[in-house]
Image (cartoon, rainbow, N blue to C red; front, side, top):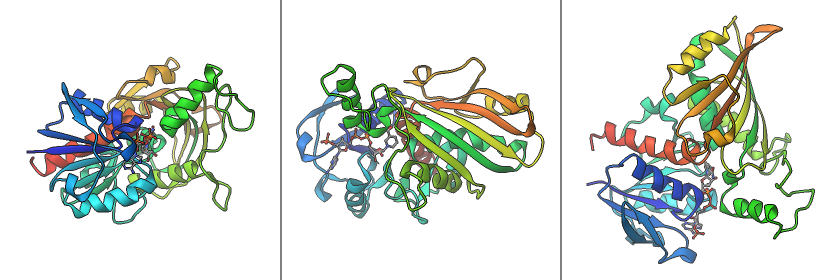
Length: 323
Ligand SMILES: NC(=O)c1ccc[n+]([C@@H]2O[C@H](COP(=O)([O-])OP(=O)(O)OC[C@H]3O[C@@H](n4cnc5c(N)ncnc54)[C@H](OP(=O)(O)O)[C@@H]3O)[C@@H](O)[C@H]2O)c1
């Protein structure tokens, strides 16, 4: 009897997890939505039944429950230990536990084989990291990767409900835009606070999480930006190998890889929105260096970048534990 719940069920990721659970006929027999006390009692629809949102307390958690965490990292630092202590498995979307050496950071297509069924928490990576790892990992068949450079064009929904509301209000003129930090008709070239070396937190996540998931130590050079797109992250990727590589061979490998579609026509985030696939677009060899590949990677940040990846982790956990 599988019981599942979503903590942050009223947010963008939480709502998408609920959709994905239904789309994939997740085999749960009961469902529990949780959010802040502001949302307590609000009704959430799951498989034709309305459920009242509850506040997470030790009494509202069942032993053996699968809890999808879809809150900020600060909230997760309270909810996750409480859930584990009450006997739940947590699949957490926040950054709170991703780099904890004792916590698996999973992308099922890349390192799903590391799920043992003994976990009480599995971390879901950052949205921009997931799509990069899905595209990069199969390319290791071409040779040793020396370094990767990635520049991102990240959708506003990646920053949660308040950011999306702000974009809508700036677009319809009910919130005045200012040149410094408005997203409407703008590009914000840093996402999150800078570290001492000048990298913003989104860049640090992309650089560190990619290596943790792939079990590699080649450098990932990241430059991350927020663009006024609703949903769908776009990444320009450059990969340097230690040998000559061919773009047609890369396209063949990727087209045979799980969760990936190869495109040659110039895909856009609008194409990616509401899809479950990571699209690798316009793979090409650098004309001056045949050990370098360049391509675009696109995915829906709320689905493969968050909700779908989390549900795939849960499915793999259930397969391993034969539930
Ligand atoms: N958006 C993306 O594309 C994306 C991708 C990957 C990972 N993530 C990560 O996923 C997490 C959620 O992101 P989001 O975009 O869904 O944010 P969001 O839209 O702002 O939603 C936040 C959710 O957290 C809930 N919450 C706030 N305080 C709470 C509390 N004390 N107890 C329980 N729930 C509480 C909110 O409930 P109320 O409605 O009651 O306030 C809401 O349901 C973040 O850690 C984010 O970094 C997001």
